[in-house]
Length: 343
Image (tube, rainbow, N blue to C red; front, side):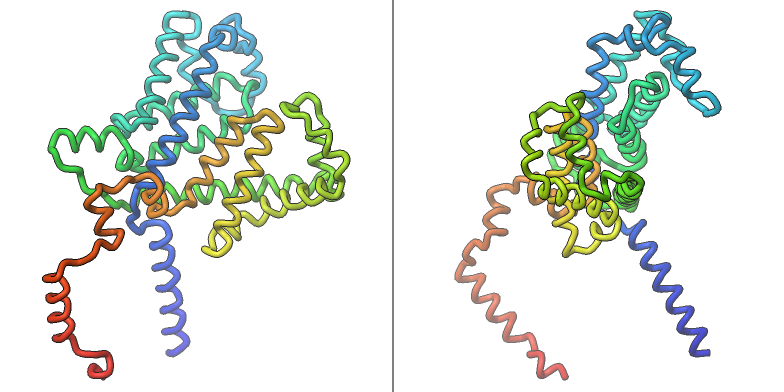
């Protein structure tokens, strides 16, 4: 009987922990920050196609239907761009509409609708432009998917500002389990990305002997900054190479404890900004950092981004109480029994 009760209690604790992890209501502040950054990234990366849209998308473009079809053979793919690319007018209309959706998502205007439209648009471009994509586009799709699930417009959005302007009162912050669920999905997705990226590196000898980063620094095709001076510091290259592999493989374990989480997040900055600055992949490096924002607590996000009114700052900053307040406090304490008297 005792063993059965112990197993039952253990199962109840596991189930309760599972429910807390996924479904406990959460402040949407972190999700709102991710929406702003991810929406801006989608807007910029798709705005770039505008420089020569018909050269990439169109019946006579570089990526023809036959070329893309040969790459996608055996897999399911869908894109509304296939239906309209023969008409430059329709193509540009759809392109501008997608940019508007990304802009609306960024500022949080009709956020739910904008998030779904952004997901559809991102998928359409990815499926049409297969062959001209890399990791950045995959991260864009991942973030767009989860932003379409969660209430990202419940924080730092024009939707909230318009409600406050209409009623004259700021709407209360609505905690929801979907906000928590969405952030958790992004967190776990980031863990999977880093884990498999690190494990894949172990198949290359250069990552074992510590020379992999030098191969990147010495590759003139990717250089946006001259890093050949690193050849004079081979041990530094070795350390940086091994730290990169260690960080990626153990990210999925060390990002969760409160003690090691700040260290892992701080290390993410030089790792991805190093890729951005030294190898020219600025958008990819920034997109990965946007994914890491999921591990910032809502309280920290609000502390950084939300400016409290002067009156509230005075209260939070320890404004000196009045004499009457002190007297009321003393009277209240006089009627509260001490800890020793309660035993």
